[in-house]
Length: 465
Image 1 (spheres, rainbow, N blue to C red):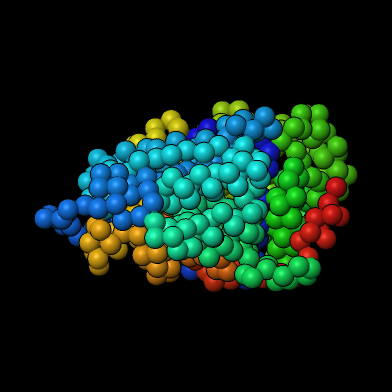
Image 2: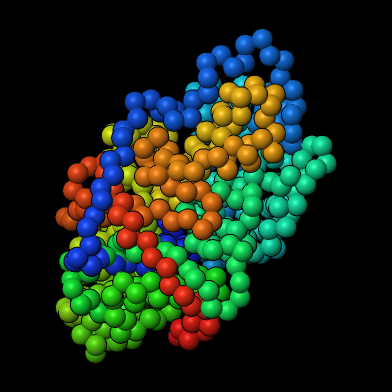
């Protein structure tokens, strides 16, 4: 997994989706993610759908031979070079895997790429490019996708404003999360349509509950991803979800992708002064590494739980953190790469990407599986010439609980719903090790792992320093 060198991002999301907690009185419900027996078992179309068919150009991005999708991700920003390269790598590899297994809708999948550069203008240009040149967006991850009108108003081959299908790996902006053509593996939870001011926000709190069970009365710091307004607002929601779970925040300092090691000195001093027992990272892997190294340098010993999300599940976290990151908890909402042998789709991803596996890439590959499932459903119903944007959008809307062939627990793809399922990893002896639930291939799916708080995210974000 390439290291998310920076900033912000997505952890804000992770955090929103999981501001972290677990009460000792809660009961867990464990759901087993059944291993698949064939790499494409969850998404394979009926046998011989191409026999006797003269293929046609049915919509933008589809020719008799090719099926073009576009992946857009923040890669080329000076603030965070290579940030979501994992999404692009994954979709390119996914297309190769699809083509090696018979293609999609009797055609070969082709991939266009667009670098959104953590720039709203470049992101909007990417939507325009995808509308014009591809059938859909697939596996995308752009933090600044705030004006989605080129996507929602995108016309199809007939000239109808059907909209551009957007099957994203991760979403942070409200506009994209709530767009009617967006389907997301991991997104910012919203009750669409979004109102301004104080409003209900629903998020994942299962990890919080777990940590509080391990450490009743936990109090400490929450590191807020502070480089972008959207991620700071996400951090405000995460802070509120943590408080609702029972965590007491001694401080909620904003961190930046530009922060050097010395920037963490005052944060550790705050934790020492408060005798903090808990530190949660709402930014990225680099933030946690630097916080933990500074804690060692300053002799901070009161912290018993160092908590992170998917943001720390990178191939750089342990090598760069070394002994200083031992014991860090990381929660995931998909089966880890360490258990790939138990799930064919997980294994296909790990095999295809090799040393380039990333958590963001996994979400992009999962988005690809959801997209192919929808396309296969259209082919099964209407044949390979029945594939249009309108038909695929309808098929995506019918997928209410997506599992990626057991790689994910049942996961909603549209806004307003949050999966309660997760599993917990911990760094032990230089490796990510499953610690909860202990049985491989399983998740805790207690409905109480989702909670709702009411706040004005922008107003709370303005108070974070």
